[in-house]
Length: 315
Image (cartoon, rainbow, N blue to C red; front, top):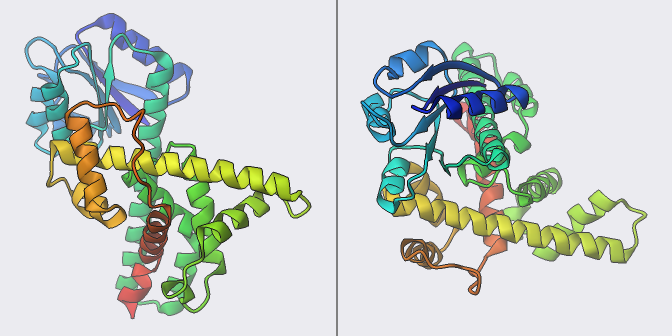
């Protein structure tokens, strides 16, 4: 990954540079002490993947800089600031930043966020490669056999990973469980029978748990893994609700919010979460009602649709 650092504090830029290089996150291809010279043309010329930019700087601050790009920079942005103004944070997210990191910088927190953003970029590039490859196949008209081969090359796993990144949970512990679940369903579905008779949650979680602990495992071991998996998945789904509600709170017309929020969740749940976030209420004592089966069903059929879109278009 290629990083560009924008902060008026030389110490902060040095700290970030050392973390990025020492942890093999990528390389720093440019730095600036304010946003005046950080144009979209400069960033695109250097093939920058991630911009890390301070909110408050002299000459041109972070928000003014991002706004000046006018959507021309297609990479990701992480914003830094000591300011925790709800209005400024909301405006930053409206302009398209991925994460907001408060100063002083915590190395562990920054590493987690930088890795998540890098993973999202990698997944998006993979999906774009799939689309371009399939479009190339169609344009050359080399037949159904080539399409079948290409579909096998890019698996259902890549499709579900892309969706999980869109839902903001690719880095959550439960994401691996969800990937295994979708792979399990995809491998065992025949003749579209799931459209009419989708397996129960008990069957699904027991199925992947038996696969994980092995056929020789005791019923107690299977049960223990099943319960742990269910908890991880529920936490991931709850995090997805929070992620989408946060997007909707700052920009109700955001494509991600419009495309995923009401597809994966009931409107009442999303609305309640948005109200909770707006009022800055804690959710420690109140659990959001999680419809695990609906979420998994939608995730499965959306991932399958992504894999098979090219085949349907060809027909």
